[in-house]
Length: 293
Image 1 (tube, rainbow, N blue to C red):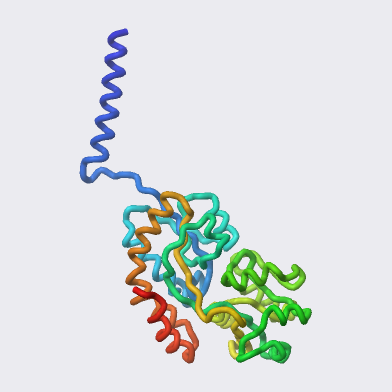
Image 2: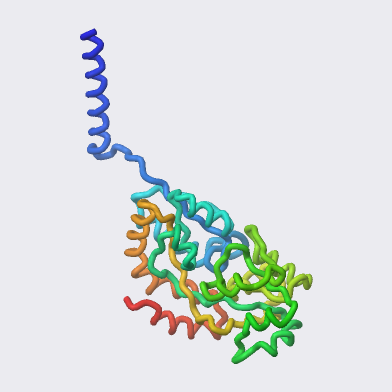
């Protein structure tokens, strides 16, 4: 009996010694937390296919963040918006670098400071349908509520995507028959194809993204027109958002420090390259005023 007790003591002492050595000796590998980055195909922020694959703004931002965050192991997952929201709500160590702040997301996401100002969403129509919008335009901005209340036109939207708190609130008040909601990884492309087949007349989207996808389809971008929405600010801001857990909040604290320089000196130029030439110069001027620091 005494011999067995001595053997147990020796075993426990050996385990304790190994633990202490493993945490203190240089060169001994220590397991890191794995951070899962959630990405979806979102030109010009992220581009999964085509000749510009990997050249989006966030495509280039993410390696900069990963390089400066060696305290984690990093994995990149491709998900659609609905799946990304679900994973963030599950509380796993997940982060999305392309999120708009919304009150709903703030319940389960811890947001970084704003990282990039982007042109706000608006309504995309084909040239042949432009006359339908004329009664609802003021200074080339469309009164979206009046338009949808007064006509039978359908508006294509991506399910569970945010288009700004103002636009999201408007969408919630519209009857289901007014909206054509689309899920999936290629939702915007599918909505454009529906518009091409005249199954819907209006598409809610971000013009740099929609223009890129139109060109990917081989259609002339000049056959389409983008209208800002009345009452919506010209720019809105994306953030890095992590699951609101201790690990997520710790990661955001580090990310905030990295963004201070990147959002001022690097990201505006990367985004401006994707804009129409007539928009590019104004955006670069406006971007100098986005952040007080």
